[in-house]
Each structure stands twice: as C-alpha cells, then as structure tokens.
Length: 106
Figure 1 (cartoon, rainbow, N blue to C red):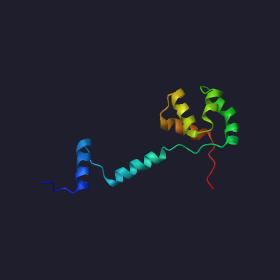
Figure 2 (tube, one colour):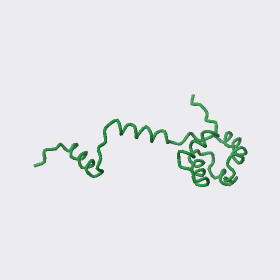
Figure 3 (tube, one colour):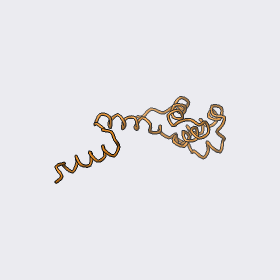
Figure 4 (cartoon, one colour):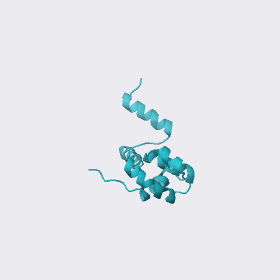
C-alpha cells in the first residue's frame, strides 16, 4: 500500500529521477535568474532609426540588412550578437544594454 500523498509521490519521484532535492528558495532563485535574462523592451521606429548608424559602428559584423531584419526587436538584435560574435546570451544582452539607451517606464 502506498503511504505517500499524491503530491509527495510526484515530488519524491522527481527528486529520485533527478538525483537531487529542490527546496522552495532554490526554485525561487532559479526563477529570479531566468527573469533577469528576459530581453529588454523593443525600440519604437524612431529610436531604431536613430540607432542604426551608431550600431553599424559598434558592431562591425552586423550588416544593414541584419539590422533592418530585426525591426528594432531587442531579442533579435541580441540573437544576432550571439551568432556573429559567438557571445553567450548573457554577454550579448550585456553588450546590447551597454550600447542601447533603454527608455524608462512611465
């Protein structure tokens, strides 16, 4: 007869399967780290137009066509930086944030 509650049984199986135990604090810390990795907000058309010329000077491996294809989407620009410069996501995001002024939320 199974003496574990259904919730305990699932957690026990997961713990056994992974070979490690997760506590609530560790899960919260992982979630916070994941939230830190969300891409910055996208740029509006005017900000993107103003950024394209300086961006070509900052990132010589990105062409005008590459930048145009991103349409100002931060995640797309970060992905290009990862691809062309062999950056990790964190490195590409940090590079993007160091160069692109982010408008403050109202």
